[in-house]
Each structure stands twice: as C-alpha cells, then as structure tokens.
Amino acid sequence: MKGMMFKVFENHVTRHFGQNMLDELLDEPGLSTGGSYTSVGNYPYTDLTKILGSLSERTGIPVRELLHTFGFELFAVLAEGHGAIMARFSSCLGMLAGIEAVIHRDVRKLYSDAELPRFEVEAHQDESYLRLVYKSSRPFVDLAEGLIQGALSHYGVNENATVLREDLSDDGTHARFEIQIGSAWP
Image (cartoon, one colour):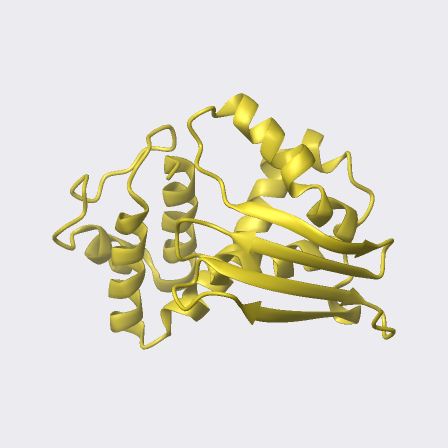
C-alpha cells in the first residue's frame, strides 16, 4: 500500500482525534515499520488495519465507520492532488465510471507497483445511474463507499443521490454499488 495513503490517514487521525492519539496508535506493537511511514514508501495494508483496529478500540467507533469517514475525506485529497485527471470529468458518475479506464490507468503510469482495486461498470445511464462492482485483495469496501460519497459531495450532487451497497463477500473485499442521482431508478 502506498505510503501516501498512510500519510493522509495520519493527517485524518490528527485532525479528528489529535496528535496524542496518532502518537499512541503509531507506538502500537506489531507495525512493520515501527510506526514510521513516508509518502513515497510501500507498506503492508495490514499496518493500516492494525492502526484502524486500535483506533476503533480507543474511540468506540466501528472500523467500518472509520474507514468510511476516511474514504470520504480521502476523495477530496486525491481530487485536489490530481486536478489534471479530475478536469477530464464534468460529472460525478462519469468520473466514477472512468476509474479503471482513465484514473487507474494514469495511476499505474505514475506508480507501476501500485496494487489498485478494480471498479467494473455493470450499467451506466448518463448522469442518473451507475452500477459499479468493487473488487480488491484488501478489506476496504467501506473505504470505497466513503470515496464514492466523497465524490458525490465533491460534485455537489450528494443531496440528490442515493447509494445502495450489496456486499458480495463477507470479508470486505467485494461489493456492488448502485448510485442514483435524482428520483427515477432504472
């Protein structure tokens, strides 16, 4: 997992729970780096899951909620940091439908070793409906859902959108999302 994700998560924790909480989390035993991450490094995703588990224990907030909130905020960071890619899309559903063909293609050019989840478009109707399947080797379907909600907010359509999620695995690695903007479902 790219170190950039760890750095964004560290900032997220500091903003919501304080520097002391982050320091305590990074001092937890069993982290592959001893709790030190750089934005250019690659780290096991299990470090993030350990940190999330510790944060959940300390705050009483379920891991899935922590991941969802992080995903929501992560979208804004990614959109800001990759403005040229985002400028290619005039709509939220167009951007979400273009994750594999455009966004992940460009990410692979920049980071050839990136292990990215897959987003398969099953159905797409203009700016009103998208059915998207998420598959990953990592248990981050809640993060993906947060990213989707963050995208809806970024494009200013979250108030008029409905997201339905169907888990296709028990381990958080595979889900189907149906996203409707407006009131008429196909």
